Image 1: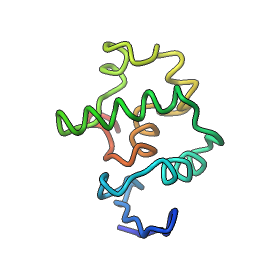
Image 2 (image 1 turned 180 degrees about the horizontal axis):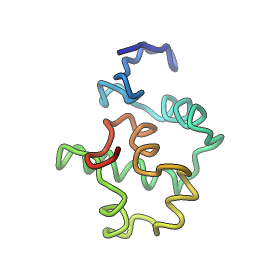
Image 3 (image 1 turned 180 degrees about the vertical axis):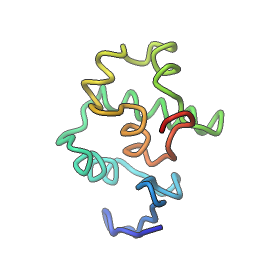
Length: 105
């Protein structure tokens, strides 16, 4: 585990770089995490995905997979890969302050 100072808060991360306490998350933290993932600016479409993922965790206890995001028409798969290149479910979960989605390697 490690800690980082982000947006005036000390945030704890697990060994894979995901926030330990998703309730400490805010949009300022998301912006910093996005930049670490190579995403310079978060758009409304990014936040559509991020907020859906956070809602799913609140309701179901786990972050949704790419399959679930696609099935529920949050955003089309192609756009999901454009928004979060190189592993959209994992990147979106990390930026959303959530644990890695189940089924992601």
